Length: 149
Image (cartoon, rainbow, N blue to C red; front, side):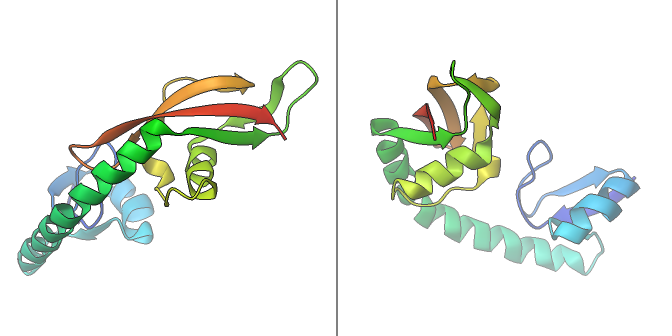
């Protein structure tokens, strides 16, 4: 097991500034190359404080932004154009990245695709819902329509 410091939020593991134990291969092959974590050391303890202070400052300013964006997302129905067959069956599936790009194309701002939670696999055209985690305390239910491109 390797003790690491997260530099960004990792789903299912923790948020920036948390010290967690993970398997060596996960840290070496996934977290470190992508910049999600750094190895833990006594000197790195000082880094934790600066990361937590920066995160707290960002959260205070972003809470109002997240609430405003959540209000926009819940009041808008997004359109996701995808390639589909004659009977409405899709060639592939709608993914979180498609929802994130639909939000950006609608002019509502940009969201990270890792924060979009699709509750089901979408394989046909129609009206669906997804949850977007904008902040620790702010989630938005997004309604979107899958249409043929």
